[in-house]
Amino acid sequence: MEHQHYYTDDWSSGSTTHWKVCYYCKEVNQDTVANHTFGDWTETKPATTTEEGLKERTCSVCEYTQEETIPVHTHDVHDKAWKYDDTNHWQECSCGEKLNVANHAYGEWRVTKPATETEAGSRERDCTVCDYVQTETIPMLEHEHSYGDWQKDKTQHWKECRCGEKTEVGNHTFGDWTITKEPTTTETGSRERTCSTCNYKDRETLPVHKHSHNNKWEKDDAQHWRLCSCGEKFDIADHSFDNWTITKEPTTTETGSRERTCSICKYTQTETLPVHTHDVHDEAWKYDETQHWQECSCGEKLNVANHTYGDWKVTKEATETEAGSRERDCTVCEYVQVEIIPEIGHEHGIHDETWKYDKTQHWQECSCGERLNVANHIYGDWKVTKEATETEEGSRERGCAVCEYVQTEAIPAAGTGEPTDSTDPTDSSDSQGQQDPSGDTGIPQTGDSSDMALWIGLMLASCGGVLGMLLYRRKKAAAGK
Image 1 (cartoon, rainbow, N blue to C red):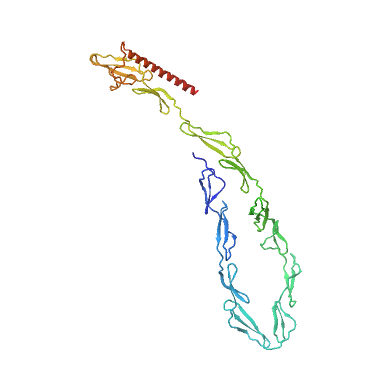
Image 2 (cartoon, rainbow, N blue to C red):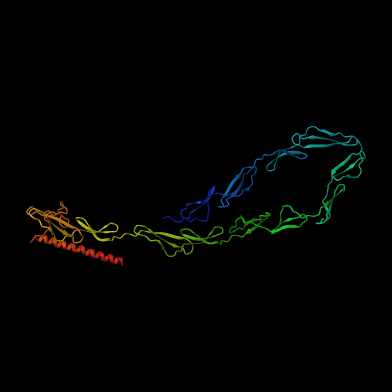
């Protein structure tokens, strides 16, 4: 018998698809079959030059986790362009590792400015591998320089000989800016910084202040905000956290941990999960064919017990040709036990009071077609229906005392012989369907005691048949009450 499918909330899954199955017959619900919906890959173990790494992603529907291996990292030139400093040049791998590191390989010097007695010259040479150009000063021709105090402009400072030769030329080395006047929203301000070498003061005007901020969020444990350069906070709000993610499951002996991230500023809040104590996570009962239980949040089964059933309820009555069914509910959970009621055994009974018959017997029939009360005909006396003459046959008949069968016989013309049964010319049986070797027609003769005994036997058999029929009818009537 077909059952109504019951699909649980749990998903089954393979490497590419997920689906739901019937709790009872395990049939796949084709309407739920679908490809996994994966999120982004998460690197769980970075690859190194000696070990493979790992990454994984999870289906957002059935929580199936797909894992892939990240191959061992092999250094390779990520950018053909050479990078360099004053000493070396190199190329870089995608991981940031420096490859092909080497000292510069210089060509010949080129004089870019000849030296004089009053001015230094300069020369340069190129690295033959990268784009680095080394520059060098050619000192003035021999001259005894005498340098005074620091000279300076907006960008550099130096000391200068009377011949005009400069020494210790360098860019200013400024300290931090010092606000000398704070700007307001209506007036400009000012700031200055001092070169630590020559004491040159660099001054700047600070524009009228307009509140502004970049897109960077500042945050603490409770809130986030954007910060103006003047220190004023904008867009202050409490964190907007997504759902907690368990980073370590607690056990019954160790604490766990979980975290959640603000969807705006990406602040991550962490919490310790206490040592796990089993407790009913969902009041709804789960069940199978034998037991029911409730579940702890960790999946442990609690309050496991056998079903406690109520009374049976017949859902389909059994008949003589079809099985029925009945069911009963567990009084604790929603499990319903279903049971087949076998077909009712057939008890023969007279379907029609009318007797059926053939030339030899009569009977009654059950509704299933079985014959009941089968017996040979019990005949009464012959009745002449047509007298025989010297030239024409006559006829006679006798009826069965139980059914409506009538046996007929021909009476031969006078002097031609014994009567013959016209019902069946080939049938020479007596009234009980037995062959009479003497050819006697069954009519008792005066003084024939054997025929008298036969008739007495026929009468007793007839009474027995009638009595049996009456008893059967009483039994049937009593059964119908």
